Image (tube, rainbow, N blue to C red; front, side):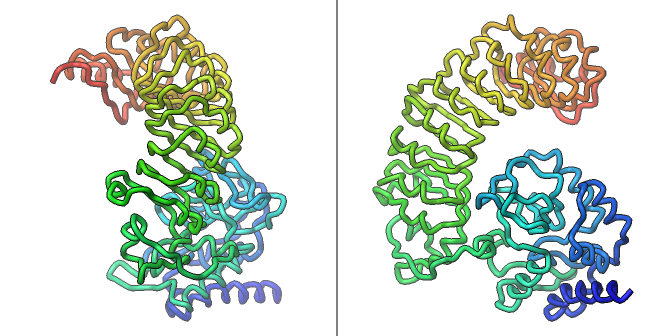
Length: 495
């Protein structure tokens, strides 16, 4: 009994860190949960939760309806929501990359990850009970809806509460009251804007001389021709637009080296002095380049990104991208003169999009056996034989049929398909694709609709309809065999 009382006192001290700033915090939190729910969670994940996490929920079961943001601006979830969210996230498409080697297990959402706080925008704070070989059991990690990179922000829940208290003390975290309740929020931005500081990475405080394009870009944060390196360190996204850049001539990317939290970079300006600074942005996860300055030799500067989009560039060979082990998603749009066989070397890809370009016979795609998503838009598809070995495909999205459909029976064996937006006429072809939710249908060759009666189709995209009335009649036919939640069509008739 004495040990239990001591544990409750310790837990109360965690919540008491907030009471100095919200005196009635105890009244705004949910009442205690019980061991049964916590035991249910442990049974699901197959691991024991740390004692400080258990004590936390035995004192208060998350935040109530009259307060938001107890967990540093994130909603503290009740145990029932934790369990439901955990179940949902097991099926999610997250593909996590740790910011430092060995701290976090990379890949899909792990069974030992407990989401306990959310920003209601798809991002979570997670207790990690399945850490990497250098990580700590019970460490707090980020799951960011806008980035695949995950960070360890605290070694325990108690240390995270100490960070919250410190943030209140220095004025970074504030609280305000309105008729709907009390809200806790950051003076500027979002918790994840402070993630670099939380990881213990040192930021050299100082200023950076700024002029031309960048002075205009950061005009609200420039003081006497300089900008704080602390401001730059919190920047998560940069978009260098072509129209804005034109009046400034050649643009240097050197300033990006100070943006240690930069996740997404979009470059459409045509006059860039050098792309070399890109390789010095370790946090960069998403890169989009549509600059005439970019040459094939600049591919060597692309490092550690997860998503890469190349737009209207002249490239011959991109096999150098195989050295980027983190690269999972590649989108190529209007790439001229590309030797498409070089795409087949990028065997770590899980998503590939080719649009409005010459794509050859597509046989090179058959080597990408990790692909789960494939998009082919405004391209010529010679045949479907390249799909033969792609057993992990869950999404195939096209806007036209193959020139030679003699191998269309391949779809019968692609049982992991969830979305097949391709003009299918004979529904018998997909009767074994038990995971299908969305399909494309050919209005001209439609037959054997009864074959989808046992599938859970809820969305259709109609190809080759002769009129809107024709398209609507096809929707009506499908509704006899499945419960459609949405539908649409490719308009091929004159309005």
